[in-house]
Length: 163
Image (cartoon, rainbow, N blue to C red):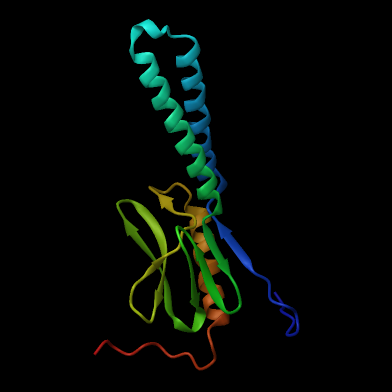
């Protein structure tokens, strides 16, 4: 692979995998179908149809909203920083990052950036749950690691031990 020195850097966008938000979208659509069925098929005289219909309607709307929100989560890798898009948007400059690591908790592998401040920042990208999604997770882990190595400053030094 060759890289031209004067070529403009691009922004790499890592997003939540398609299968993750589509599963939530399917749950939402099915919940709306159940809500419509409860509204039209089950007679109101049974008493529970109104409450269950509202439950399925609420579950469907929350799931669909969650799927669209999950679709926007991710990380933008720019030449200057990693922009983390989760609940809030955080920008972490490459020169402040001390490492890119994978950690496992309850069978789920996640990617963390280790800034100088010491508080790891979890990246909202592909997670590997019990082995599912492992190839996408490893690909994104290596992409983030390579971007960090390529874009940290020349005078970068590891942080000293905490005093």
